[in-house]
Image 1 (cartoon, helix red, strand yellow):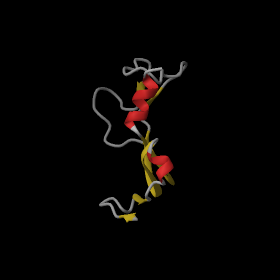
Image 2 (cartoon, one colour):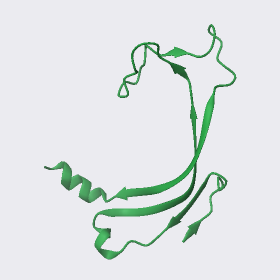
Image 3 (cartoon, one colour):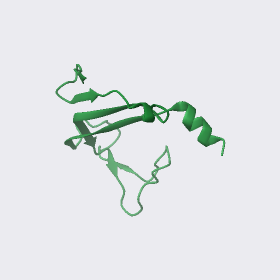
Length: 98
């Protein structure tokens, strides 16, 4: 089953029915045949890498000069595909009990 999206230039996916033996473990599995991702550089560090788990990154230097926000930022566009997997909530809760 194909799905059209208002963002179809950036996202196109196929939803397939799950085989009975997988329904216990997964809510749904979707094959994404077109996916657009844009990565934007907001700042950089000079010596130490930023902590990926921290919400606040005090050692990142902004790209803008002074206090004025930048009107543009350098970015890279990546096109690809992938698989979206939604696990069964009941099975996840059972795993949490261990």
